[in-house]
Length: 100
Image (cartoon, rainbow, N blue to C red):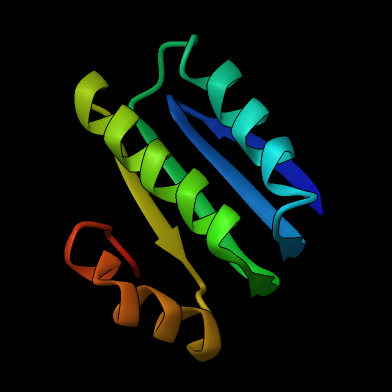
């Protein structure tokens, strides 16, 4: 997985590309952990180039949602392909995540 980070006035965007699975989820988890040590207002996860997500990826996303809630940070997930969105729907995560 490739993670491309951009920052603009307290908004951090992470464009993700590839597979978010058991092998790569730790890369995203580590990146998020380092971000949460900074002062940010909003986190955007761009899923445009994510073609697969496993339960390990879901775990990283839900842990990030819990962390942003505790820190008072807004998090959005954008450009989610229908196959990935269906995973969020089935698991009920669409009720707790902001998916645009």
